[in-house]
Length: 221
Image (cartoon, rainbow, N blue to C red; front, side, top):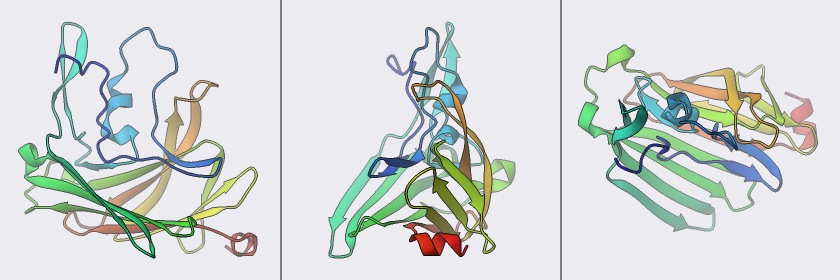
């Protein structure tokens, strides 16, 4: 608690790049700030991560003009596996156990050729009646150098100024593109987009995949 004045609620969040092209990011924090970080930038929703009922994995409390973390994940697990297919990591945290009895789980696999990233986001535990309709939301904030749009099939196509395009698809969730902001760049705050997945049912896992496209494939979408 004593050293959490600038701590972030980003447990299990990640960023992903291919060579010099940044793809998935977290919103980050301004390079220079002489004041306390806004809670919005510290919240789980500002990270490439999952929230339950739009609540952060940490609970914030304001005291004496500072906002600190009162409670947060205490048990975080990570298991890494290497196979011929690629590198995998299975993650979990208990940041929602005290409030809802639920453990968040995330598995990621980077395929051996480096051209595809697959993931599954899920929960472990009996789902209670949750506030806010019990929505489980997973966000993927995109780097502002990418132009993102929907394909005819409902997937998300991400196109950089130079280099190959990337396609994001998922199962088990409603997909939308929403506004976001990237704060950590040298240029200051920049508008960008985020992919938002709202699970069809809180109990069901959401599987997704990011794939690099050949030039001919991108032109046909």
